[in-house]
Every structure is written in structure tokens, then in C-alpha cells.
Amino acid sequence: MKPNCTNIEWQGRAKCTVCEVRNFVLFAGLSPHELDTILQPIDNLHVPQHAVLYKQGTASPYVYTVRSGLIKLKVDLSNGCQRIVRLLRPGDVAGLETLLGDPYHHTAIALQDADVCRIPREVVTHLDQTNRNVHQALLQRWQRSVDQADHFIAALSTGPAEARMARLLITLGCTGNQPETMPSREDMGALLGITTETASRIMAEFKRRGLVHTDKGNDVVCDHAGLAHLAHG
Amino acid sequence: MKPNCTNIEWQGRAKCTVCEVRNFVLFAGLSPHELDTILQPIDNLHVPQHAVLYKQGTASPYVYTVRSGLIKLKVDLSNGCQRIVRLLRPGDVAGLETLLGDPYHHTAIALQDADVCRIPREVVTHLDQTNRNVHQALLQRWQRSVDQADHFIAALSTGPAEARMARLLITLGCTGNQPETMPSREDMGALLGITTETASRIMAEFKRRGLVHTDKGNDVVCDHAGLAHLAHG
DNA sequence: ATGTTGTATTGACAATTGTCAATCAGGGCT
DNA sequence: AGCCCTGATTGACAATTGTCAATACAACAT
Image 1 (tube, rainbow over the protein chains, first blue to last red):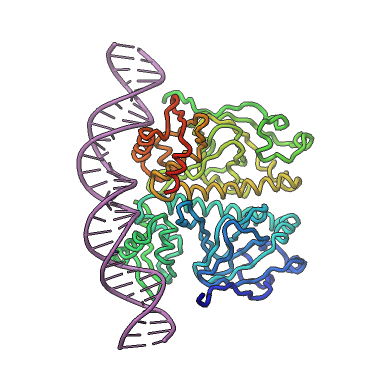
Image 2: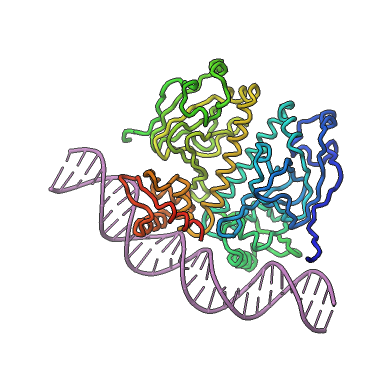
């Protein structure tokens, strides 16, 4: 077996009180004192690109919040294919179903190198019961999952492939200002419910039309207005 | 303007203590005494087919639970089309986003005559804070929305139209035992992200192949095994 | 430099799906 | 019955997308 470079690394105990994205994550409403009183450890993990954070159908008592990077949630289809049902960015939460005792409903894989906090289920359930702000934040994360799923249905799974690709690029944050790292053509296909080849063709055509411009590597800059125009039609 | 036969009718104050589906809905864990102490009124509404329960973008302080019938949640697309993102059956909850102060994220319309309970937001938030069982049930409803949305992505928006239609019929509960009421071809199209004509062609072909059998009106009985086979491939 | 590997791109063709228009079928009405 | 209206079905054709195979390209190791 060849050396595996996609092992998740422990990065130390999370330092929530100085977390630079704390205002976006689950514990926004906690005082430093309250954070100190958490008995269970919150660990900081580095998830290299392509590493598996958890597998669909397995159970473990952890919820994850994304601090940096990009995580995909995918499901296995009956015919062996896969479909990506969600993209998680900094501030998003993964594995909420574990709070209800369910095994994970998806397989979580890093699309780009990511840092996540691994939070024991008991920490979340306890804080949910004792802190109003955390409770509200939890409900908001759950609603956010619903909203993102709806976006996948309405924007990324509806209409011709070209329009969906344009919406995907916009969803990925292509504003035209700074370069964005693109997923592989295969992942784009799994995101949009089209084949890898169709995804490749559309991206190549976008390049020819000047709608996207290769920066370096997988980074591109986009013509946001042009993409927005295609996203409608 | 022609007479409107799709007005929502008030059916009286909800009698939760004798509600035949209470075990499936939000207040499963409440004792009769606790139910009596709810100050805000829970109303029982009849929603005729095609009636609008609420509109996307509007705000009102109500959550709804479906007691009978079938409700569709749809969103308006940028190009004027519409996409159905969820189907709600008895026990499902609609409008949870109102608990977070959001306007409704969808337009809710009855696909079949439906009975719903209209619950003031304050009732839910109060019970959520005072009763452990209601709190847990609320989280489960939220997760159920996520799961149903994921099903729309993975099963109803992936693969060729024929397989998606087979999965839709199975989702609608076609077991082959008793007849099921079908949505219109237009709604099937909006459910699957295909055109009305394609939906019609596929259903007609299913009939010719004997996979579905017209019972009476919009009711059909299905060959569950045959559909399940098509759903894979 | 050379090969090796994995991904992206492209071509050729088949299959699917969309578009637009016509026709058909059923229910309600006069 | 005859008419009207709506939704379902079908036909013809164009456009899109999938399939399978070949090629191009970039990163990396030898």
C-alpha cells in the first residue's frame, strides 16, 4: 500500500477563547468563563485534502465545525455513483445528526485542506440546555443545513448544465476579485448531477468565452457578471 | 374574477389531547395537563387542494404541522420557473424558519386536501424551553427537513429522468398494495427538475409497460418491484 | 531527460431531454 | 347532445447530455 498522505492530524486542544472564527461558529454566545468550564475536550484537527472526516453509516459522538477550508458531504447512490449534497465552509457544522443518536448520514471529505474543531456530542447537548445563545445558534445551524440543501436542489440541480455550472461557480464565491480554487471536474459533476466530461466541456467552454480565467494551478478568476447572466436564462 | 374554491377554512380549536396523529407530531411528549396549559391557541385548518398555506418571503408567527394530506414546498427560480423542494406528509412540520425570525423560505401549497395545525411561534419556543421531549422532537423535525431535502438531491435530482420518476413514485408511497393519488404531470416535473412533457411521456410509458395501473381518477397502483428495479440502473 | 500517473480535454456518436405545436380525453356547463 | 376548458398525451425536431475512447497536459519520480 502506498504511503497515505491524507491522514487527519491532531492539532492540539482547541483554544476557543482566542478562536478567530468563534463568532461564526457554534459557541458565539459563550463567555470566556463558560468556555473554560467545558469539561470535555474540543480538539482541533487538520484535515488534508481528500481525507475522510467521517463515513456515512458510522456512528461516533462528535460534531464538527469548519474553521477553514472546504468540506464536501456526499452520499452513495444505489448504482454505485456518488452525489455531493452539501459544501461546508468556515462556520458551517457537520454531523448534527449525531446529536439525535443517528449514525452519520453522509461521508465527509475535505475538498481543500481544512481545519475543523471536533466537539463531543455531550458538550453540545449540555450547552444547548444551559445557554440560550448556544441553543439559538444550534437551531440556526440546523436551519442553515436546510437552506444549503435547498440551494442544491433549486440552484444546482435545476435547469441546463451550463446554468448550473455558472451557479456553482458563484456559490463557490467567484466574485471576480480574487482567485478561487476549483474542485476537480469529477467533483463538479457530483455536485451538479452531471458527468465529469460534461463538467469539463462546460468549464473549457467558459474559458474560451473568457468567463473564467486560469490563474495558477486550480485557481481561477471569474467574470461574475457574465456568470450571473448565464445563471438565469 | 371567478369564485375561489381554494380558501383555507378554520376547523376549530385543535384538540391536541385527542389528536389521532399526536404521536407523530411535535407534541408527542406532552402530557394532557401540559397541553391544557398552553395559553396560545392552536388552530385546526383545512387546506383544500391548490390552496396556499403561506407564501415565500412573507412573515407570520406560525409553524404548521400536517395532520393529513400532502403539502408541497416550492421556490421561485430566477427565470420564472418553480421547483418543488419538499413534500410534507402527516407528521411533518412546515415553517420552522419562523422560529428564527425569518420570513418563510418557501411557498406552501396543498397537493391534496390537507388538514394542518397552525401553532403560534411562541407556543413552540416556550415548550422548547420547558419540556425536554418537545425540545428533542423539535430537533428531530429540523433534521427530518434536512433528510428530506437530501433525498430530493440524491434520489429525485440525480440520474436519468426515468429512474428519478421511479424513485418519486416509490417516495410517494406506491407499494403496490393500495392505490395512490398522483400529482399532476406539471408538479411531477417541478419535483424532478424535468419538463411537464417529459414527465407525461415517462408516466405514459410506465403505463404501457404495466409498471403503473390507473385505478380511478388520479389514483394508480404500482408494480413496486419493477419501479425499484428502474430506480437503480 | 524519460517514463509514469492522474486528471483534463476533445471527438464521435448514441441516447436523452427540451421545445413547440397539435391532438386527445374528461369534467362541468348550458 | 354540444360546447368549453383544462390537463394529458403525442409527434417532430432541435438541443443537450451521456458514453466510450483517444489524446493532451501537468506533476512527479526515476
